[in-house]
Length: 182
Image (cartoon, rainbow, N blue to C red):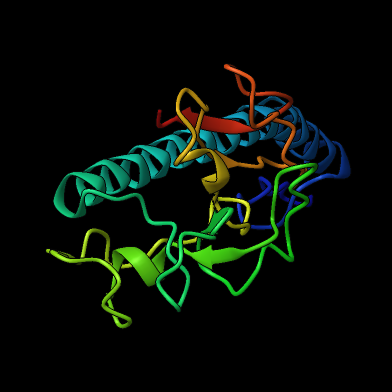
């Protein structure tokens, strides 16, 4: 007579057991992935909003210290029409109708005063203006800084990379994240 032995726990799993576990993992992933993606998008918007506040604060403190807005070009003429964050020009963002005749980086005004156009300059006002959470530049419609009553926006173009905010409106447009400075 043969003695029956019990199945040991370490001999493996049946195909049904593996399919059930894989199904449970797939259901959990289907529930969790959209929730995680929503949180990532919300955190990007939160970071962009915080960056906008920092830039706006730096602009206001700069104006209080120097008595001017940061619109001087390298020859100390007030010709800058578009201020951008980190980068040479708004090449990775569509400014969609904003006056970008003369662009300047915010770092040239906030981090250094190499051309000595601003006196007194008590900076740095911001060590570096980084890219927005989508890797694009923040932009400011500087053409309106010296116009009485002209709204001035500091804007992140959001996920689509297109500035939908009209520079004369009082609200942001599209998926832009923006803050009105004046």
